[in-house]
Image 1 (cartoon, one colour):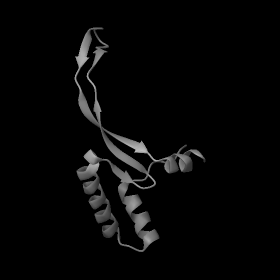
Image 2 (tube, one colour):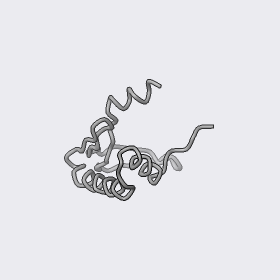
Image 3 (cartoon, helix red, strand yellow):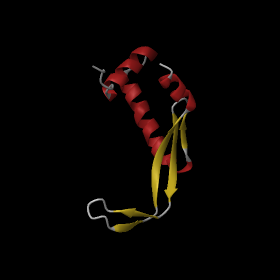
Image 4 (cartoon, one colour):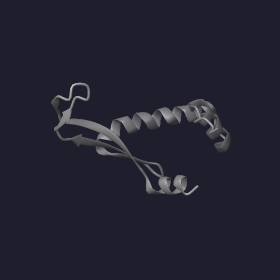
Length: 95
């Protein structure tokens, strides 16, 4: 049975232990990093070794309502995507 993903508090505790910092300091770092990423995402925000947040403009397109089969127009919109870094892909998929 696969193990579960780590919770934020588990990650915080692990990083605090590994880096000789308090859990509060690590938690504040996470909060600051998230706030900075949200603010800068429209320009592209890179987390070295992890990936990049990018804002992408999707074009308007035609779609189909799966319940009725009716053709509908889907409007253009902005979406946020995360592009995984090559280093992260290589490290995770190599195992």
